[in-house]
Amino acid sequence: EQLSGTAFTAPRHKNLRSWLYRIHPSVLHSKFEALPTQNLFNEANDLQIDPSQLRWSPAAIPSSGKVDFVDGIRLMCGAGAPASKSGVGMYQYTANCSMDKKAMYNSDGDFLIVPQEGTLVLKTEMGNMVVAPQEIVVIPRGVKFSVALEEGCTGLRGYISEIFNGHFEIPSLGPIGS
Image (cartoon, rainbow, N blue to C red; front, top):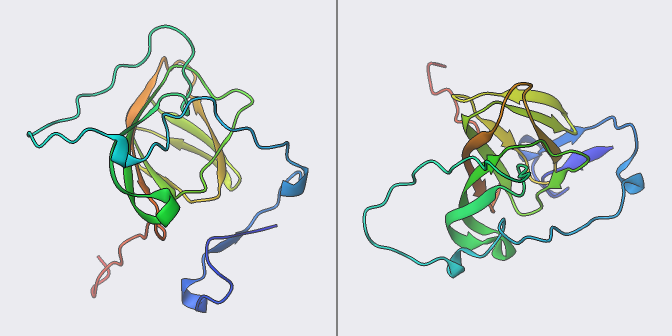
């Protein structure tokens, strides 16, 4: 099954696609269920703007109740909107439990996830990854994924940057390749 991030008319050098070998094809996946909470993709227009110099203190990892990665995402600021496919969203995330029997699919944009505390164990359609603090991971638009806590970890905390237009690109190495 092919996952494509570009139109079929895109020039070959800009084509973004991957072939995935799945246990079950996408047409056999269970029915989509919307999240009951709307913390994740609120319009940035709903945020109160403060012109003062500010800093984002680290979010507290929940100490009671079960909060997984999706439930712990909070919009901090943004510009533009997913509907116009233009702009960016900045989030903080916290979690104290794994996403058991749950997966996320983002149709709005690419996620760049930066862990601050706790190691993420990511299960994606393209394979599994372990992402620790001082590392980053990009989850492209359209890729289903799930986040688990590493064994012995009591919580996760970090930041997410989301772009609504295009995809994150790795910078070129420059003229001398360094």
